[in-house]
Image 1 (cartoon, rainbow, N blue to C red):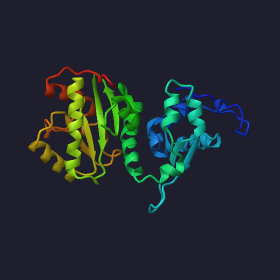
Image 2 (tube, one colour):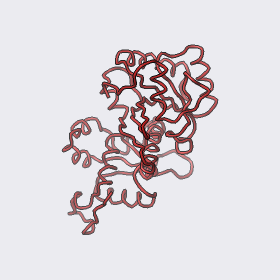
Image 3 (cartoon, rainbow, N blue to C red):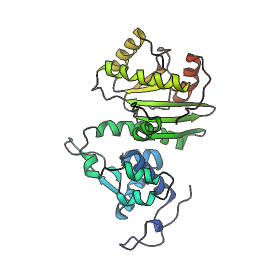
Length: 287
């Protein structure tokens, strides 16, 4: 990517367009869509190193396009979290999705910092940012779609609220998936209850899109698979566990319920799920 070199220092009269690079614009679009990303997540997804990312975030802050905060009530130090400002949403309103972004982005940095589910949102976004980072460094890999919880729920038009939807491709293999990021606070029965809505959606749409549960530890994964074995789901389910930055979501870390002794890369889950259901692999008609 060729970046523009700023031609003058920042001042109160500097226009955002005079300082923005293509990568800056992508940072702003990600923040507007996904509400909050840490500096580390942005660096993983878009930058060669954290230092360069911090430098560009500082520029965006000076231009009034990004706010940052560190979550309260945490021991030790925490990463800076980045949020798009109202000015950013106004600038993006010229895009095709701008008006929707402006209507649904009602939180400021303080409100997001105080969200009780901030850790959950950060975990969801970490999975997708790891995929973006892997794709940036791997020929033939791409996160072709990343939709937030709100965008996915709006597209589906149901009470189903996945934590996100993605389309991942690597080489000739691809997989569309719904993500459920589990922090370990919900009982297993509640996780299984979510599958009813996914089953209804899959059968009505005639697709084999798997539901992926990212779990906090191996014990929780094993317990969930025992329950899935007792009551095999009619929708494809696969699991992974651990810290997404260490247990990489693109790799062979996914354990499918239809073949629990296997561990597959994310891209291979698509074909395997379709074969399991004896359906042709096709894109989701609503997403």
